[in-house]
Image (cartoon, rainbow, N blue to C red; front, side, top):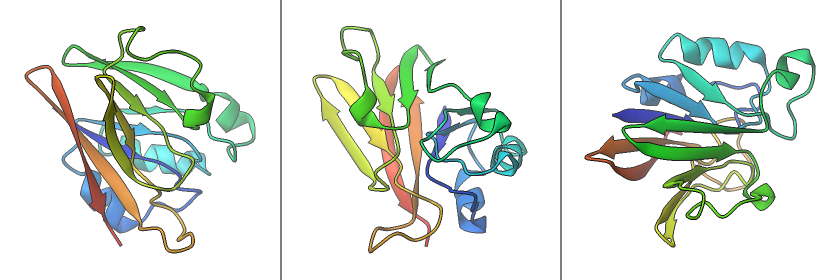
Length: 151
């Protein structure tokens, strides 16, 4: 199963991001969406799970949870915007993947058997950071992630 992962769009959904997510069976947005239109455009590709980021304001944003639990192919995934606000031990809680955003810095790291994925930012350019999304593939009950530079 291919899950597209995106974060920190800040109201800008680049055509390159849409193209990189086209094959996704599900899309996870890790916050700082910036506009409800972003989620609608992503839903045109695949079902979307999204969390609220620190810049998401207004009634549409209040409808988004601060964290989300997803399960695909027997893999439990915990999604939140700011990893610094993770208030649990993912391994002890049974999570194999933690997805976050906020830093705009793409990251794939395995710690204590948990895959930590930050897709980076696909929104407005920030400093010298790359513009990225990620693919999370679940195959034979094993997660693996790849960062995709789009611009």
